[in-house]
Structure formats: structure tokens, C-alpha cells
Image (cartoon, rainbow, N blue to C red; front, top):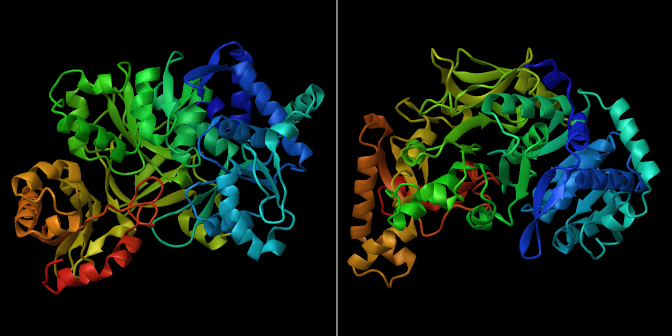
Length: 563
């Protein structure tokens, strides 16, 4: 890794880019009925004035500033302005409850809370009203017109920014240039995790900048690339791999209207790069299969707007059948690996270094080794500073400079990393067999009739699975069986439908060992969801919640009764 990568900050990267490419197009955002271009000079001016507004609101270096907003232009401006002001950005996922939002505000000791508008204010109001003393000194500001949050008035950020003169903005920039250091705390990201209360991951300027530049060095990005971003910027995957790689490379970025509008936006913008979670890329594949277009050359590329040169999947394991399908269509779908605590990228496939079933090689500057227990360890400038106010958890996660990821893996002779399971998700059967459920689940969901699957069996005599059918793919079979008019629960209880799924499971697991076979299963009439707490925001399974929500069904399975 170059010296620039280890000495750079997000502040220095942005100011350098804004100066060098002032007249160039930086960003595409929806304005009315069409996407409009925003140039680097305009973007930088808005960032400087917003940093000045933060100062007017009393924010000083090292203060924590909460941001609760979906992706939008102001999110990007606020992120960069908070860092320009020397403060610490604490983004909060908009899908959280008011109580969860309030916990993060209180836990990080926020000085200021930026809201998108009335929806976030409403979520917070009732909860904060019950704890008014704890939030007496917290100010609330919004992007859109917004009612009071309990007793607290909410000012519009744009109104405050309009009062900032050029001299003030210039002074703040000069201070940022002279005082921002690579080791400075830049952000705190609360991880939802799969168990336990949220932990605030502390990432420095160096963590973020080095990881973005290392990812660019490994994966490559061209000045004429157009990257479409749709994953929540409050999550580190999109923030580093979309937002900061865009700044580092000087390419163009486009903000999708919403996750549901990604494909439509591809038709308007014709992006060349697209990050996403495996579930998204698999849904695209399934749609083409259902339309009978999966064997038509160019159909996949056309769906993405015709210019896509690479997609990158992260946040969860990419099923091999999805990778093979994209390869057969001539579309590069690279798999990467990382976690919030590593800023996040540890490794990635590239167009010149790919191996099916792996997550590529470590990016420049990142060291990886495998512990004697099989756990993936990583060391380098990407490793977090630690967990906010949790020294014991920090000491457990980082030992002798190495971050213990909690994931199990292997490094092959060519340096490619393969993920074999999650250390804390390992199933140990009553017969003493260790099984990684993610592997079995990936095999099951490779079947077009299976939308989601959770494998269970810890301490049990055999494996069982909770299966969520793909209702659209199943419908022709239901019609054939005369069950098309039945409600989902009634249809899934039919023995003929269960026989179809028993055959699917047998076929998909035909190549695994006898103790990895799923012996019992239940068909669920609703998918696992974020709203019920069963999935994280990046669509990872929260196994403890799922097993709790379906405890009766699981017990019925192991009592030998149908569910």
C-alpha cells in the first residue's frame, strides 16, 4: 500500500478532489422527473456551508453528531461536513425503532441530531418525552420542515447554512486541513450483529481512507465510471465502497431513488458499477428465470442498463449458482468480504483474480492469517480503533494488533480466502458433529422454489430447516395441483406440496455428508423480515430471533409432528 493510503484522511481526499475536478460532474441526484448533475465545486460549497452551520449550532471538534436519514443528497453533504468540522459522524439506520435510536443518541453522548424530517421526529418524540432530562442538551435539526421533537424545537439545516458567509467557511476548511490527522476518530457505527446489544464501532480517518484506497487499488475504478448506490449509506459497505471510493477515484456517483427502483434507475442512468447484497443479485437472476430470459444472451446486461462492467456482492455469502449464472451471462459479479470492524473490506475478487467459492485475495495493506482454531484474523490500517466505551469487548476483539473476525476460513496456496462458516454460528449436533449452517442454507436457496432457509440442529440429533417458499415460482405448481385459490398456509400444508419440497431438499443436498442432511423441515407462509428483527439491515439472518419467533414450530419438528 502506498504512503498516500496510510497518511490520507477522508477530509484530505475530498478537498483534493474538489479542487482538482471542480468543474467536473460529481453526482447525479433526482430533481423532479429526471436525474440532474451536480459538479464537484457545487458539492464542495454545500459541504463548507454545512460545516459552518454545524459550528453555528455549537458543534466543536470531537463532538458526536447523529444523522438519521435515508439516502439523499443531504446525507452525503452532512457526512463530509461533519468530518470537515472535526466532529464524529454517528449514522443511525432509519429502520430502527424510536427506542433504538434514542439508545444510540444517549450512548454516544451526541451533541446534535440531524433528522431527515417528520418521520424520524415522530419515532423519537414519544420516547424522548419519557426521558427528557437525558436529552436536555441535545439539539435537533432537520433537512425537511419538521415538528418539534417533544419539547425541542427543530430548525432546518438549510436555514442555518444560509447564514454562513464565505470567510467562515474558508476558515473551517483551513482548520480542517491543518488539524485533521489520520488517527482522528471519524465515525461510530453501531452494529446490529446477530446477538447482543449494539456495539459502537469506532473508525478513524485512516481506517476509512486507507480502506477506500486499498479497495480501489485492488478492484480498479475508471474516471469515466458511473457508480449507482442504493444500499443504506448508514452501513459501512455502501459508505466505504460507494461513497469514499467515488471520492478517491474522481468518478461519478448516482443516488438511486430507492432500493425498489434500482433496476428502473439502471435503465435511466446506465451505470458501470453496482454494489449490492447477494439477495439482490439472486432476485435479479430469479426474475429472468421466471420470465424465460435466463438463457437469452445479453438479457442480464440489458436489465442493468447495458454498460455494467462489474457488480460486487458483499454483506453475506454469495451462492455459487448465482456467481455461475452471472458468469454465463458475461457479467462480472465479484464477491468481497469484510465487516464493520475492518472498515469494511478485507478481501475481494477482481476481474483478473477470481476463484469460484472464494472471496478473493486480501486487498493491498491488509494482512490475513488463519488461527489454529480456523478463525480468520486480520491486521492493518483498516482495523477499527475499538468499541465505544467497551474496553473489555475491544480487548477481546483485537489482540496483538490482530482483529478476530469471528468467521471461519481457509487460505489456499494462491492466497485466495474461502469462508467456511461463522464461529459462533457453528452447529454442534448431539453426536458431536460440527456443521456450518450457512453452507447448507446456500445449497438450499439455490433451488428456485426456496426463497429463504434457516438450518437448525444445535444439540439435536439431526438437522432441520425452516423453509420460506418462493411463492411466485411455486404458483404454477399450486395451479397444477388445484391449490391456486387456497391461502398460503393451507397450500403449504398440503402433503403434495410438502413432497415437492422434500424432493428439492434431497436434490440440493445430494452431495453433502449424511450428518449434513436436513431430515425435517417446516414450510413458512411468511418470509423472514427486518421489521420482525429476523434480518439485519444487510439481510443477514439473526438466528436467535428467528428461532425464538418460531420456537413452537421447531419443537414440533423435533417431536416428529408435521408443522
